[in-house]
Image (tube, rainbow, N blue to C red; front, side):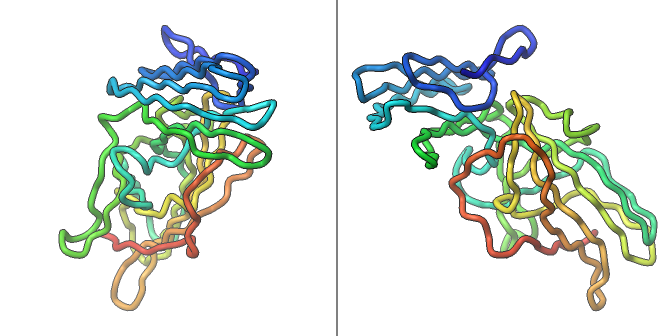
Length: 253
């Protein structure tokens, strides 16, 4: 059985796999989740989230040892599933001189998934956000042809241990400037379904990205590619399909 994690004045549940042998209560910031056995082969599910909404379900189970997994997931569900792209606006611009490179860590928003585990399968039971007021969409590009994205204004992190539990994970961004002049970077847009998510206790890290600033014909662009993080932390389950391509391009200002 998993333990709990201290967070300011309250004690919150850690990520991980929990046995459903009997009743189970999970506490997250402004959210409570309860499983209650109602028969030999069924549980009730109750969740009250940070906006006061209540979700109730009946869960039939066939396994003699049912389990659930509480895990950080990509922030693509709240307020609605409309996109697989993430738009991170840095709170401070990053400046790179000509033919130089840098590595930074940034915070990236997450949501939290509840999965029913049976055999090797993970069925998505529910999801929540502990930060609904900062869960919003943004448009990258023009109103006519722009790309709808999940949007977040993010700050730099010191390292992978600097995640904001239940709200944000940490990802590494490597930026390379191959241009013949200095260039500032204030944002990045990428398809976050390409990025795996990992957890340990209440902390979260996310696959990184590499941004290469370069010239294509007469246009300065940023090529964005996913990079895998090497870690022994647990990988979160997912229900989104990975994309066929792990890179995209965006214009430079």
